[in-house]
Length: 184
Image 1 (tube, rainbow, N blue to C red):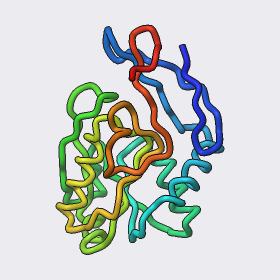
Image 2 (image 1 turned 120 degrees about the vertical axis):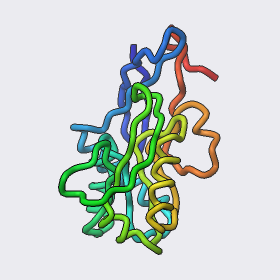
Image 3 (image 1 turned 180 degrees about the vertical axis):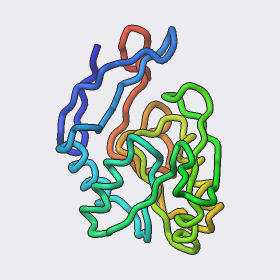
């Protein structure tokens, strides 16, 4: 089963994936779709508030934040990693719960990246928001680092996230019942 939608002027068919016995989600993946990634980056930059740095969670948002940095002429963006790396030095850590990740996950940021954000306006970017857990975790990281959250952007707002006023997004993405029908 698929759900067809248009985002940033491009139409894509999203495979429906079973989340549990009663619900399915549309799998929106920009990996490998350069045209879609570039179009979404352009559209998000058009609605972005003023900012000094962008940060995104690993992994699906990486090509998006990279393309946004490239198109905006900025030479740097920040990532919240799923695991600390040896080269990161001291790290900040927060917990996140996402419907597309089995259970709880942690996000990590290096002290060097935290120092860059201190006192700066930071734009949080993600591909899809549903429960808002990733945005909450990212916001916590930015606050721990002494940064100022300039705004939160996503390509898609899934389910009830579309009603949130604190997140700007390009298109809503419904949740689906077990038969693939959009839930209201």
